[in-house]
Length: 304
Image (tube, rainbow, N blue to C red; front, side):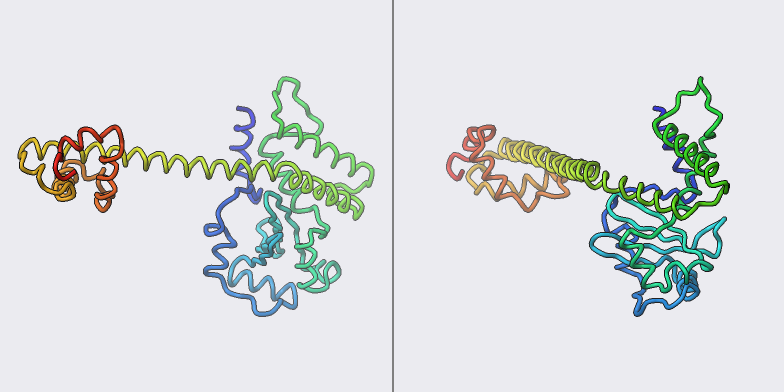
């Protein structure tokens, strides 16, 4: 229950980028493939890229191993670009600043290559999201409440805040991240990603496939139940017709079944939204299944 409370809070955090697996069609990739504008040639500068995003919306590059999504960043990073690398359950976020773009990447093609290769170096935007989350959950690296029952998520956030404070004391620069720290941060994120791919993601895929097969089995089960209900209903209607007019027993069973199906559909339209075209199959069931066989041949002693 504690974790569910924390989750409901995280869903309110701006730009936290919580990830759900969805089918391709409703995903950003699916929408881009269906309705998106094709990029004919790479953008040659940060400004051309940023202006295109403002005009046309997020830019998506999709590969078999990862997707790279470029969006205009919101406050407090107005004027910058947020790059999101999405691969399976793993998501990385990188802040691309115009004043650092030339020195850090040189060109958009090189920037895209670093994002897709997952070796871009940046921690600023993700740590900003971490601080947002800590504020929402009212967590502090130094003020630990012994009466508070910290959730697993909260324990990890507090630990991260404490390590960042230690780094700031060592470097003497509060709120600034040295290249060594950023590289170490990125290596840690890559190790976490590798753990996901090696352990969590296979289990998540199995769980998703199980859920899919469970739903399909449920649909098949409901379909089978409805078929049995139609068989019972049709047989009762056929029996009622012959009881009302015994001469009908000398007709072909299919002719009687057609009349009975009209009555059945009138009595229960929802049950007979489908199945009316399967009368021959239903008669085969009546003639072969032990539940109906004896009574069926009693109804049609000459023609059954």
